[in-house]
Length: 203
Length: 248
Ligand SMILES: Cc1cc2nc3c(=O)[nH]c(=O)nc-3n(C[C@H](O)[C@H](O)[C@H](O)COP(=O)(O)OP(=O)(O)OC[C@H]3O[C@@H](n4cnc5c(N)ncnc54)[C@H](O)[C@@H]3O)c2cc1C
View 1 (spheres, rainbow over the protein chains, first blue to last red):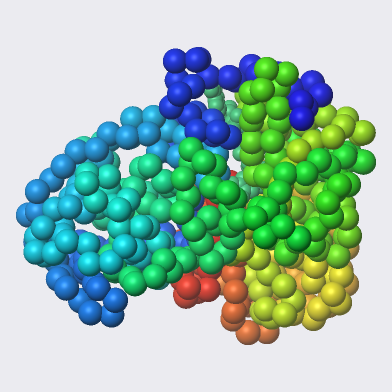
View 2 (cartoon, rainbow over the protein chains, first blue to last red):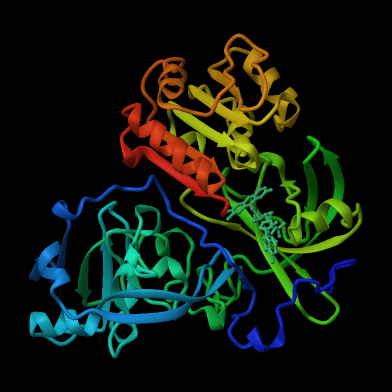
């Protein structure tokens, strides 16, 4: 339906079209979204636990985690509130390298990423491996600020950005696809921006 | 809905039936829904505008009206200079226009009288909109849940819903309004003229019979960060605080 009197003045140049998923617009800043106040997690208190169901597989403290191989990912990110930001530059530890350090391969097809504030989000294991995702420690070369999920956040750039859980403290493999915090509150179980899977029930 | 495959909140057209200027920068648009829904206070809709060449812009707007308002919803939209969607509403949209929207959306920043209280609401600028829906819901339900609304605006004339809020405050039925003006002197004895801080939060909470069981904070990102920190500094447990950030 064409809206009376609305014109495409802000339409992005066509060379960027192919990078902007449906219903998204290009943002130069970096807005912040979260469900509650920003937790201040000190690196002394930080840890990351890998679990299979209730069973811990391995736990790293900040120094141990930072000793894992560091990789770079420069990716476009897409927030469900409709902004897209190009070429965000992150450094962190690939999920592949975390699993390798624990000496395992993904034991189930599903995961829940957990955060210090109690938030959790579900991501299929196949979306985390093969270089697709990392636990990010640096943004544009600097420690990630608490606003943006520091000290460490998940980065799964090919899904809507709420899947990239802030203030990450663990990854848990689950037998079933278990909805996380936002997924229980009306947001899509998978969240592919290219298929516009914003809300529960979107195809 | 009959088809299990259909989205929970499909796009629908809604007709603008009334436009009301609230403040110099905020105007309310009342929409008649073609597919009526009942929202929860605090939820939002997504609005999408489509140009003749197919280009679309989409933004989220909180619902200002109470769930009890049946078939019509009010959106209160602040005009942002150089924005894309909000100036369209202020300059182009007219009564009778049809706009596409979907909703209700969001399941975290919501309150119903059944959730109880005491309730602490903290809003900055247009961030008061979803809190207004909560206040109106409380009134429509004749709820006695003790509620304090701390509302920060730049000046007196930018206090959105001012007359309605002051009237509710005057009823003295458990709803307390605290205004804080950041660029003007306070007008009422209970009001402040500074940015929100922990002391103001403590004094506002003292108006409630007991500490709040739920706190909702909404506004720009900078406002929400500062106000949530002020609540934490005023010893409100972090897990009682729910936030909604309008972006940059
Ligand atoms: C859940 C939710 C609920 C919301 N509820 C409300 C509400 O009830 N009321 C309300 O008023 N708002 C609300 N918002 C905010 C709303 O969604 C929009 O972000 C807001 O209206 C601005 O949209 P816009 O298209 O006018 O501005 P945008 O085009 O998005 O621009 C926003 C700002 O960035 C600047 N800007 C952006 N792009 C450019 C560019 N290319 N060049 C220069 N400057 C640029 C503009 O100057 C402007 O000030 C809500 C947001 C969320 C997430």
